[in-house]
Image (cartoon, each protein chain N blue to C red):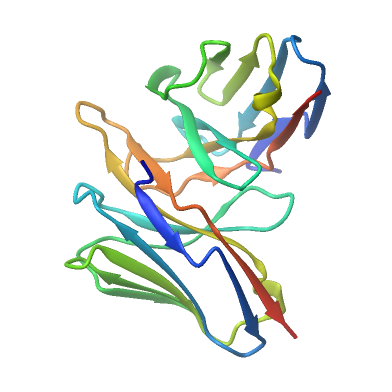
Length: 113
Length: 116
């Protein structure tokens, strides 16, 4: 009964490929996020959705495209992968739009060769 | 520009000692200050949080001290245990102008090691 789940846990791929990471939460939250954690463990928000609507879209390359088919799912598709995309990607959800605990998934470690 | 500055980068404490991690911010629009704990291979998890109208919040061995005038806040871990060894992130949240959503800005993390 994992609260926020992500698949896959590990993703190893070649430069130039396209890949997707899936996220699902069973907490009934309206708000979901994607974060990138770099090799120095710095966490930075990439996107945020509220009830399937894109709210925050940080300055990330447009090779990254989030998609929210319903409010329990937020997927991340990455086109034309580059070496610099190697990182751990975390999905998170929160029950409120503001001043609220964010519940993080276990992360997806992406390695681009 | 780093919105939240965290120090130290790493901290080694003897079992039973006090661990102290400090954070500072500039933007007075921040109105919620959580601390997250991350174990290797796991996602961050909320440890404790404070709002700026309170100067201190304690939950078990974990205490946040908040100094609004100095724009600083810190995490104190009393009686530190080897199981506390993890990376700790301070964060600050505010709503962007025109947005209905709060955004979290994280510090760069502190790697805490508690020796038995």
